[in-house]
Image (cartoon, rainbow, N blue to C red):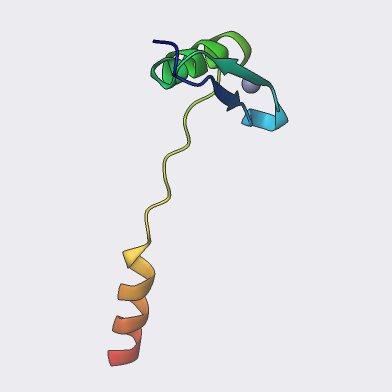
Length: 65
Ligand SMILES: [Zn+2]
């Protein structure tokens, strides 16, 4: 069956804006990794910013003191 739609990928690393498509969603990750390895070898995935509990904690503490 060929019902799986191609997936459009876009790279936005450092304004790369490269777009390409892969035959199936299953190949997305690998294709992305491949592109990064080839064009952005030094790129590291930015760590997801954690909601900072610090700030909440800080203000709460600051208020109670
Ligand atoms: Zn790229």
